[in-house]
Image (cartoon, rainbow, N blue to C red):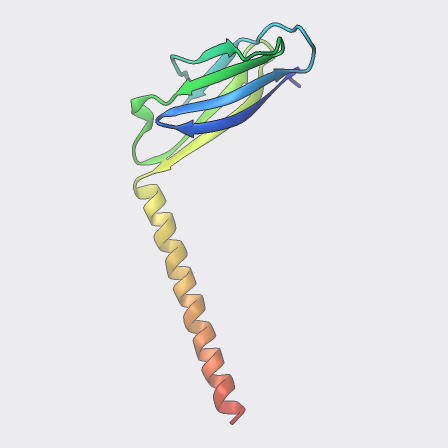
Length: 125
């Protein structure tokens, strides 16, 4: 269990941002490691955020992570070896197939409800 908690504050323009808070007052910031496909992500910054036990964490999304499929980023406390948070990007065909499958299921269910409603109307006349 980590002595820190990380909460996402926003994600836009290719930059994931979060607020890291230490449980103990006056604690030093942990060494943050962000991985994508077991490889470290470069350009991660941790800066003081006003209070002594709070830091702003910024994770830039690398260009190679943008494309078809699912990409999961793990944000780790490297010293403790624990996961603080994660975020996932889903794009391209993987997302399209999922939406098309969901729409096909909704259409099938709607057709079933229409048939049942028409049968009910005929039986109650």
